[in-house]
Figure 1 (spheres, rainbow, N blue to C red):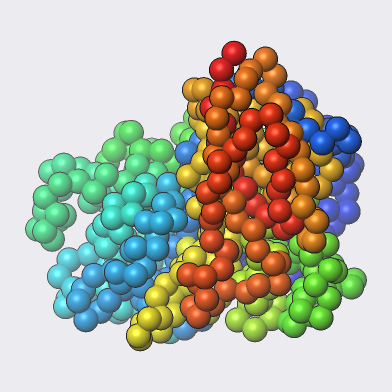
Figure 2 (figure 1 turned 120 degrees about the vertical axis):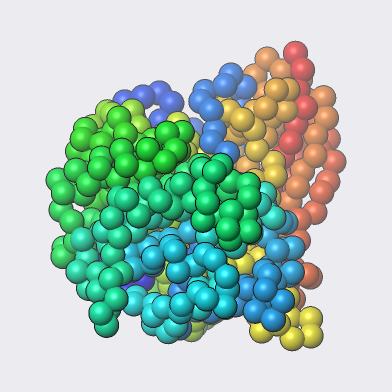
Amino acid sequence: MKRRTFLKESSKAAAGLATAGALHAPANALQAATPAQLAAARQDSGAIAVDPAPLFELSPYLYMQFMEPLGATDGSVEAAWDHLRDQWREDVVEVTRQLEPPMMRWGGIFADFYRWREGVGPREKRPSMVNLLWGGIESNQVGTGEFVGFCRQVGAEPLICVNFESDGRRQYMQFKGSTRTADAKEAAAWVAYCNDAGNADRKANGSPAPLGVGHWQIGNETSYDKNGFDLETAARKTVEFAKVMRTADPNIQLVAWGDSGWAGRMAEIAGEHVQYLAFHHMFDPDSPRQPVLRGELYRRGPDAAWSQLMKAWEVTDAKIRTVRDSLGGRKIPLALTECHFVVPGRDRGDVLASWAAGVSYARILNNHQRHGDVLKIATAADFCGTRWQNNAVIIPTPRGNNRAYLQPVARVMQLYRHHIGSHAIKVRGLPDSLDVVASRRGNTVFLHVANTQRARSVKANVQIDGQTIRSGRVFEIAEDPTVELSYLNSNAVMKTVEKPFIAGVAWEFPAASVSAVALEIGS
């Protein structure tokens, strides 16, 4: 989403929250429970009760990251690249390996004026380009090979956004006599460059082996600009792009645009040609009438800020349900390829550096898992940056010990990513104040638990229907919600602590904590 339009989208999200209770109840028993249904499942017995029967398969891409060159507004990709050594900064690679994202996406609206050939070949011959959305000059020293190389270094699958005829946005099609838009043939040539074993251009550029990019997105936020393609045009062109791109590689997985009520019609026209429909959600989680998060307000009233942040997941839930409903019952996976808070404040909101935001994001990620029957690609942050705090990784000036570090949202992503099963299972009862989802892989049951109490621990027994808990481990982040991350304390706070789980004894989840519990079970 264009960040400058976030206020408009935030008002839509607030309206969605106000009507969340009126959304249709799930027609499918596997669909995520509504906020009201979750509240009804809470019980006073102090037990987390789990039915271990597998419900649906969880996608490995629920904790993806999104990389877009952001020009003068945030150093982003250029800051992550070591121009003196022609390689990615070692500290960025190291911290991203710790995060271990399963997928990374290249593109965004940047793709509307990006010509991929300018970012391949000898570095000294690559032309620079003007970033028409974010301002400033992009050097193109980071291009296709460098992006895919980074993905391989950190163990992520690449997802590339193609230039979809500038999504119909005429303001990006031409610049000072240079054509910035691109057609289906250029997209197919990009697929061939990456995946065709015999591609001469790639071999000439020093990459004899295919890059192996399996996922490609056609269209980015196409519905958000009234001057861009309308739905019928976008759907027709999506089919065209899909057919031509598959002439280069018939095995690629394609993502089409499906937000703003487009999902049903896009699926009807292009569904047989694509594997996912994408939507985005950038929103201000603050109260529009009585803001408590923006600027420095969250420091003045930590109780009010905490209360507001604990409700933020309901806004994202309303958005996901709206997109699900717009499918009209059609069976096609969804891809939330951009999502994060946008809180007005210094450098886009210091609140996002606080542990309170970390717990809030844990609830959002739990909700993504609840929708995992249809939500197959999802994120809750941009990837890296120097100023905006809605990133997973912050990149300080590389001097002395100023090393890249993980934001609170990334620490929760890292925790969950490393301790999750292959299939969702049902949490049929839980104590008040705990937000819990469960999954299973073989004989291991995983719980993701957020304690929504700012200053009170919560005790809970864990019961697995028909099973005995043989052993277990708890991986826990417990911190004062007002603590904020910076490069000065990134190694000292919000650390994951591993503890043994004692079966048959009520576990105490600390105040404002996020935990991943791994339990070995047997009948």
